Amino acid sequence: MKELKQYKLILKILLPLWLVFTFATSSNAKGINDNEVKGKVLIIISSDQHGFWLPEVVEPYKLLEQAEFEIDIASPKGGKGIASGSSRLSGKDSNWFKQSSLPEKLEQSIELKQVISRQYRAVYFAGGAGPMFDLVENQEAQRVTREIYENGGIISADCHGPAALINVKLSNGSRLISGRKLTAKANIEEGRWAKNNYPFLLEDKIVSLGGIYTSAAKGKEHVIVDGRLITGQNPASAVPMTKALILHLTPKEKHPAYEIQNSLSKVTVI
Image 1 (cartoon, helix red, strand yellow):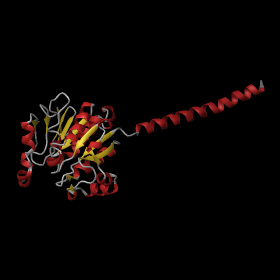
Image 2 (image 1 turned 135 degrees about the vertical axis):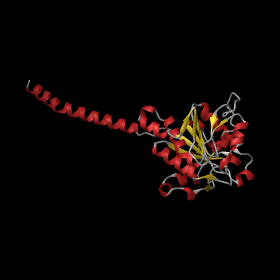
Image 3 (image 1 turned 30 degrees about the vertical axis):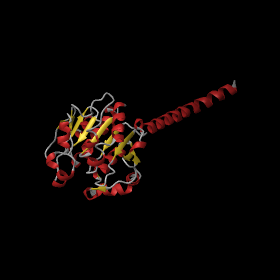
Image 4 (image 1 turned 90 degrees about the vertical axis):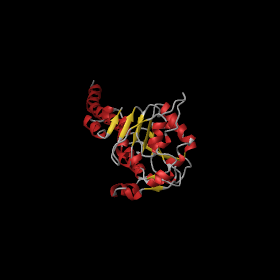
């Protein structure tokens, strides 16, 4: 009887401690799960000699990383591309870029033919002059876009990045942009060099292929969300375009209503 009383006393002391330990362990495990990477996003840049626009890579990459997405960089040829526009980075973004993992990834971009589309929840095409020359007819870029889209993923692009989307055809033979609202670099934003050297102006080409093109004033932020197609007009649109992408990749209950409203203040949702 004495031993039984001692046993009960030990249980009385240890049971609460065990419950506390169990709850703490469970809470910690939940916290780890909450912080897990939310999925992978693929950023595609040009391999062409005319280059990609660095701010349109740095700003989206930074935001996606802060939102806890894993990001890969790919290009038609793989390896190092030619970056332009580094002088347009803010001091804050320039310092962040130098200390981030992005420079190494840009040096060792994945060749497009090696990309396994099912690994990604979204693809983003950065702009610059290069996409007008090496992404318009690129079969691998079209394959990746089609596969991600048909797997339920999101397609996004900014400025001249939408050049990669204009010839994408889905498995049913329809053109991705046909009858869809989207934006890209506007005719009024193109300079003399672009008009003399590009194979076409992107605004004109989108319209001729059945896309419903819209734009804001020259240099102003403008983003169009048409279902799982998200496009930005110019470099100024890269940040709001990326915020729209993140919000569409993240359950709405994770974002306060005011955050959604503020993030989409420059975005037209169709």
